[in-house]
Length: 384
Image (cartoon, rainbow, N blue to C red):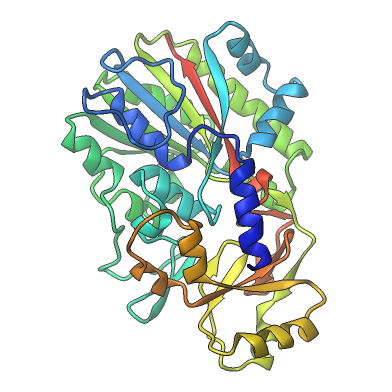
């Protein structure tokens, strides 16, 4: 058994969460239907099925559970703390998906399915013989999710679905993937417009779900790091926005706040271009799966020997098939989607990642399996 496999098994035993990010939307749909209960993890919601008019699902990119704990213990979110004290809301840890990175996790959130089901297993994947960058594109015309998106699922049960995004993301590749059939796309230009636009959508009083995405925490974490002065200012702003929402007094309306992943400080990066200079058979741009890269290799022993001499940082070579069987990418009987990333992952030790270009460096990052990356918050607040 490889070290990665052993760590994964130990990690699964240590997880003390009641549900996964993939369970958020299925639990949300339960509030609007009388269908049989969701068979996955049950969120400990106070909202009552059949008594919920509207639900806002607010995804704050990069906000790990440990960051919420820090913010509350350091009095950075006094309004949220007061809501918890007055029994208007509660906080629980939630398990995100592997790899813990934005395109993978958002696809899981907005389909209710695991990465191996919806087909987004990393930021850069193979598709019809080409490399596709999910975040930056360009996307092939035929590229879609392998499972129905949230807009289609909402329409099937007869409720409305709106998405509120930053204006710069309106025509981005990930928006096209996640919202191909969403007619109700709303945007805000600057941060102050986030609650304004969302409240405007709520004023329409259509029964249904509003998805709200915000990227500020993630952007700050990458460049400045969590707990930096800029991070603290951003967290205080989020607390203010929560106050705006929760003082609107909307009957039978709830706010769920969660995240796609957390962050850890980075010790350094491994230059892929130097590795390729020694191993010219490697692709120019490899599939990127979290902090790992994916390759096709037959002689694992020789590659392992080379890597031990090339780098002082431990790099483990792990079979993607073994990872799939162990449940890394979710539980499904179909392994065909693994062809999108390759036969093996090259996984550096925690705190290290591959640098594909010189611009890839981050002070903090994500995509591994530490608790700070894999455990995110789930907050439920009443807007009544």
